[in-house]
Amino acid sequence: MPLLHGIRKIVSNVASVQRASWFATSVFHMSSVQISVKPQEALVDEKVHIRVDGLPKNGPITIKASVQEGKLRFSSYGCYTATEEGHVVIEEQSASEGTYTGIEQMGLFWSMKPEPSCRQNVRFLKQDITTPIVVTFSVLEGHHSWENLFDPPPKPLAMLDVLRWYRHPRVRRETVTEGNIRGALFIPPGPGPFPGVIDMYGGPGLMDYRAALLASRGFIVFALPIYAYEDLPSTMPDVSLDYLIESTEWFAGLPNVKPEGIGMIGLSKGGTYTLELCRHVPKVKAVVSVNGATFYSHEPLKYSKGDIENTRYARTHIRNSVLSRHSRARKWVPVRIKEMKGFLAVILNMGLVRKPTIPEYWNKSHASQLSRWFMKMFSRNRFQVILKFFHIVDNKRIPHRKSPNYSPDGKIRPLVDHFNRVAGYFYTPDKNICVDESLVGTRGRTTMLQYIPSKAAKFGVKLWVLAESASGYVHNIKCYLGKKFSPVTQLQQGTDVVLDLMRRSNLLNKGYHIICDSFFCSLDLAKRLLYLNTYITGTLRANRQMPLTIKNAYIDVNETVYVRQGNILATAYKNQSGC
Image (tube, rainbow, N blue to C red; front, side, top):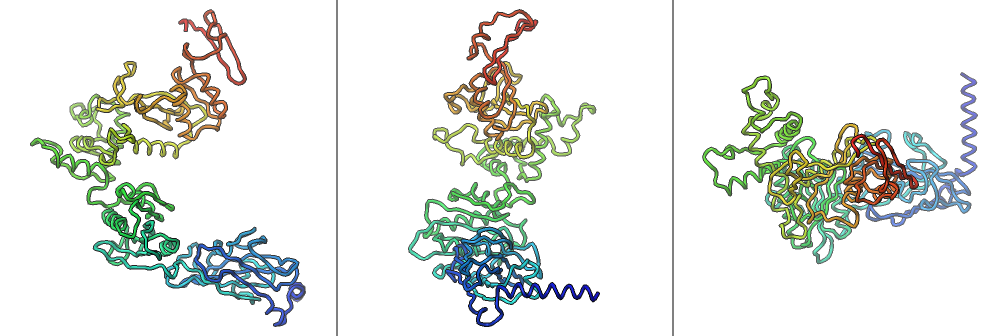
């Protein structure tokens, strides 16, 4: 033990000598170290210039930044070495270690984290924007680690406080209490009108720091609380879409908001709500969703007109129609999210359990053929009335037939787009994939209706389908809209379809192998795909471009002729049937 104590004392003395070689301990030398930050008072998004002077030649220092917010304290640090002239300029010199490394002009700000004595895994949130963020900069002797900066902290060589504001002093804040509407309005200086933005924080209460900063940059901003603020609902499941729509329309109609439209920015659940409001309020022209879900993962958003489009469409239909005495529509009740999920599950299972008519799934005459699962989900009448009013898009939002923006798949496009996103997200297909056409049987009135006598349904909507060869997993689909709305480009239609499906699926340049029939396959397509590191196998129609050796080949049964051009191989073969 005495030997160990002696070693510690020697090491301590050596470390003291090394520090003394860089910094003298006299008051005169310590006071010569100065730190400057320009500007010393600014908005939080403005860059600053940090410089330390009066240092020994090539002297090691640590620059630490600290902020106190409530009971939490955040800090950051960077280790630097002075130049020959005895100064450190952060925007020009590299930090060798710290909460950041390298040349980072604003590293001491963005790399802050809670100090060891505080609660961890929390982020800095400014609660009171009427006061600045006070950032204390300290210059410390030598290079320090994170643990050595606290308890007790090293004595600083120089210190400086810097003020960072979210709100410009000329920005005006007004508390909003208009009927059901609650929040805070931030108005920039000037006559206006200004570009308008609604800011929604995804948590409880009112968070207005980002709104204040945007207003300081010339936007008029409405910080819109969602719940747990004044007399608003105390929990998120009680939030109503009606309140959000009313607040958005009120803000968009203010005289000092530019009439062309407004933007929205939302965090977490607020991001989800901004996407929903984009559907319901035409004045919303742009949305920024920060970490917001694109679907309602836990609870549906309450809405007086129903949670989903079926309810709105059903009510409009019932109100504008003369119903018979025994019409099922007279017993209509709104469809909720859970019930709609069950409805879609039944529809999908009907594709697996085939029966001639829909009522047969509820037929109890033959016990061996009962579909008990269907009966537990719905009564026959309830299923059929939901099917009758099944609707995805509000008809008022679909462009008129004479509009240049009209597309015949407008009523189903959101469903198709969602299917393609989900199919690509949850599964990556194997190397071998196929492209083909499929006919979804229907005799509905639509310009997309096709008649293909070789198909079982004969009449229906034609889909271009990209699927995995081994499992049949459908990875991407595209509706054929007809000649008027799906004009053929300078490429052959088959070539255009294959390239488009592969681009939409993000499968090009990944070594996939496409298998297709003669409608799609061509030498031109093979060359284009080969250039994109994608391969193809298929049959060629006689009227398509092909090598004359293949086209004019006279071969006997079971004979084969090969022609190769680079990496493209063409084969002619005659089997027993003469094909």
